Amino acid sequence: MTDSFKSVIITLILLFFFFQTHAQEDNKYNWTVEQYEFVNQVYGENSKYSKKVYLNTEISKDWINEFLYDRNENGIGTCSFEESSFGVELDRLKEIKFGDNCIDKKKLPKKVTLIKGTSKKNHLNISQPIIINHYAFVYTLTSSYEAVEIYINDHSGWKFKCFSLLSGEL
Image (tube, rainbow, N blue to C red; front, side, top):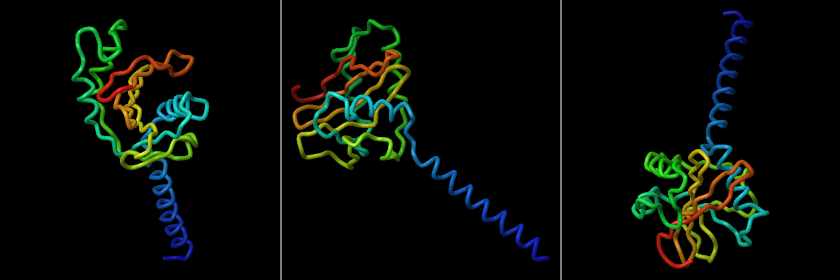
């Protein structure tokens, strides 16, 4: 083999490893742009939440089953089925597959802190937001209650719509 041929082969191998590593870095975060935008708008610096918000990366999918258990023909929690699409979106919650919660901390507001497990303090703990069409579902936990908050995106941003209390008092 000539030296130039060896150089070409080595260069190709190095390029292959460079692009492979770069592609893995791009795919390590499984949140969508819309999820980051939601957290920034609802829980960020300009939100109604004055305290620190803890984004819990270990909240399991169990809250979805508990939430959907309270569903009836009129709605769920304080939410009514006035909008025909809302019931359809609830049905889709059962199909949600949670990722490994690889989150880019740089895309979160400073007020939101990533944790494993729940905070012992009286702060708001939230789950990964589940966004289905123009609805967002967020499991919330404080020292006094557990609830699922539902938000709607009305094209001017995310607005609180209703909630379903799972336990405790608001």
